[in-house]
Length: 375
Ligand SMILES: *Cc1c(COP(=O)(O)O)cnc(C)c1O
Image 1 (cartoon, rainbow, N blue to C red):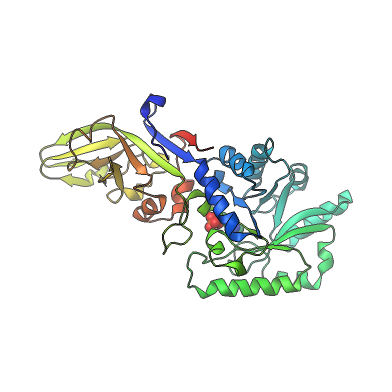
Image 2: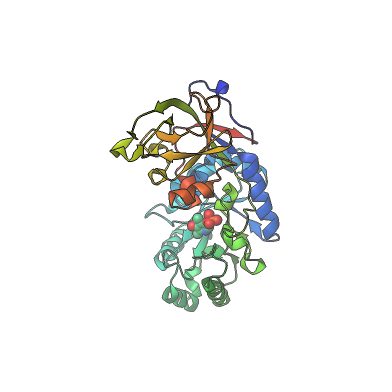
C-alpha cells in the first residue's frame, strides 16, 4: 500500500487509507479456502469501519453474492451499494425484525434472520397474509445464549415443522463462541449440537463459521461461511502468523515538536512527568477519532519506521509522543507518522489498548481524511 502524501489534501492532518484490493484479496483467499461452500461477507458496523459504500461494490465485483449485517438500516445501505453492481445479491440482517417491519424487509429484499419462535410466527403470518412463500434465515443457538432458538424452542420447532409453512428457510445458522481459541472443546460441542439440530429439522442449507471458524477445517464450512474481521485484516488465527493482508493505514502529521528542558509534565492530569531534556511531538488525533484513551502511556507511533512511545493522556483531539531519540531532521513539524500500518498492525494497536482488533476497526474515526486505493 502506498503512503499518502500531504500534497493531495493540504488541509488534512490525518489520513486513513483503505486498501480495497487487500479486502478483495482477503475475501478471495477465504472463498478458495471454503470452496465448494459459499463465502459471504459480513459488513455490519459499516464494514467494520471501512465504509459499506466502497467495500460492498468492491466485493460484489469480485463475485461475493451474500452480505450480512446486524441491523435493518445497515441492510438498506448495503442494498443501495449493491444496486449498480449486483442487485440480485442476498442481504441478511442478524438482529431479526423490528416489530411491524415485515413489509419493508420484503420490499427491499432483505432476508430476516429469525431468532425465536415468535419471529418465525410473525414471518409466517405475514407470508400467509400475502399468499406467498417468503425466504428467511433461522438462527439456532448452540451455546452463545445471545440470539437464536434455545434448546426448548428447537424441540418445539422440530415437533411442529408446520410452523415453517410459508417460510423458505434459506439457511439454518449458528455462531461459534470461542472460534479464535482453537483448542477450546466448546468448538466441537457447538458443531455436534448444530449437526444434531440439522438432523431434526427440515432439510435446508446451513451456515456456521465466522472468520476463525473457517480455519477449523472442512467440517466447519457447511454451505455458507460468514467471515467478517479476516476480510479487514484482523488475524483470525491469533497464535499463528496472520494469513490475511492489512487493509488500513492511519498516518498523521506532527503538528508541533517542542523541547522540554526542565522537570515538567505533559498533558492532562500532568500524568507524564519528564526529567531532563526531552522532545515531545503532538499529533492531531485523539479519542474522538477512536484512538483509544487506554493507549495513553502504552501505545506507539512510528516515525520513519522507528517506534516513538505515546506519553501522557490521550486527549479528545491530540496525542503526544516522545521523539527524544530521533534526529530533528526526522521528527519535525509537518512530518507524517504511522499510527496503524505495516509497523503497527491493527492487532498490535489493540493489544496495546487492551482490546481486540474488532474494536479498533469499528471505532475508526470520521474525522480522518479517507483515501480508498486498490479498487
Ligand atoms: C459478526 C458476526 C460474524 C463475523 O464474525 P468475525 O469474527 O468478524 O468473522 C459472523 N456471524 C455472526 C452471527 C456475527 O455476529
